[in-house]
Image (cartoon, rainbow, N blue to C red; front, side, top):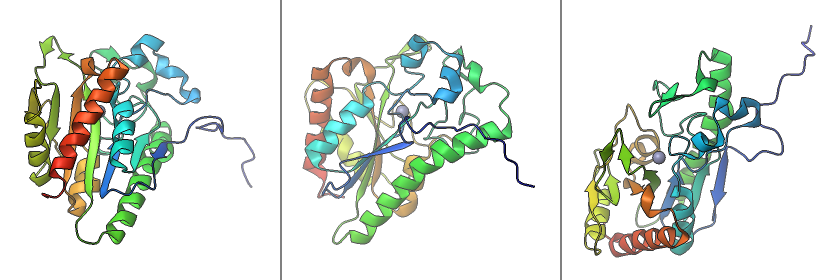
Length: 261
Ligand SMILES: [Zn+2]
């Protein structure tokens, strides 16, 4: 007998998709991704039991990162894929086996809606959010790789980081990270260092590791693409002027190195 009960819908038709593709037809040999673009929580999860202030904080997303990434995509005419939901619902830059995939706490804040999840609840988030986001990246990268002629496409992820973590002040204004293949990140790092008045970190504030990262290892390095992760300090992204300035700096650095890897 068929089960005629109506199963609850995970995402309503009125809610955004798990992934947004911005400037899909962009002509540059570059794919941009923003894994922590949004702090949105599906309505069925009732804000995970958090208040608006907690969700707006850096634990919910990377504030300012999506705005910089959109400007960068426009300026460089590159496609950009943005995740549609909060990293607290499911972190699209974590391997599925990571204990942080659906965090029970973040920076000391307990996430009530992530406690004691059933395997069905966990699978729903993977099926409706994580998989569609990564499938869209995989599809676009595969199409671009097929189209490539002289040079491989580059793969760049855009993040932002909090100026203070566990009472430690972080000195870098921006960081560029790589894993085993450093050709793209090293060049980008050097181009940013040449710009005035900014402190640039290399593999700071975070290195890329298979146990903690997903997008660069899986979509970039596993395909042999020049890949790098950018992290911008969030206190530089609190105004529109700051967002525009960082997008311009990164675009400028990229233009000076794009023929070198
Ligand atoms: Zn991030």
